[in-house]
Image (cartoon, rainbow, N blue to C red; front, side, top):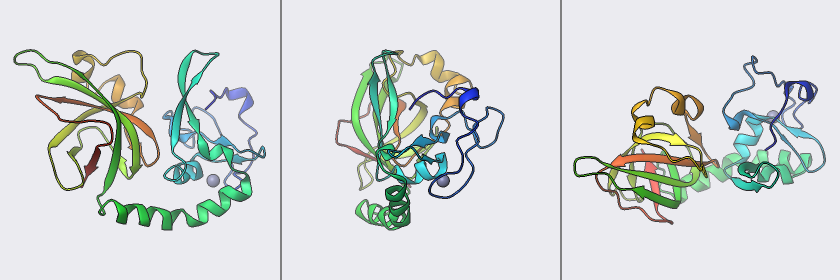
Length: 216
Ligand SMILES: [Zn+2]
């Protein structure tokens, strides 16, 4: 998604699906610094507000794509490929879609799909640092959530914090210990359809792509 400047975002008009006026100002409550608050421009030039976009993400998950100009991975919203009419129709069916997902995943409160797991080994008395990247399938994860690996209550682990997916800067032990500091302010939660990275500090954690992490 593009970075919006205050000057060119005041006149986005109404959300084509819910009719809410899209006001983008840093001081405005409608604009959240977290990336999921941003609206998205649809294929036909209409706008979808951040709230409608977030509802659609469980069906049209967020992706990260390489921005060749900025030379970094930036969030890309697949829902932006819809027209206003399609977005409105999809929003009308999204509740049923969510219920089907919940049933498919055994009605856990929140479910995450692991796509990549990196580990930085700890020392003799230090836990290892695991960076686990993937998509939230539905529900919301926050730092300090206790989760389990697998749908049927496997290994338990505590999410230390959430982090940028595809960050080129590794999380250090020091950043994790400042858990009330910078990291958590930007990434207080990750919700359905968002791509996210979880950081775990554990002695040992057996995780691989394709695994499911659940919260109850
Ligand atoms: Zn809306």
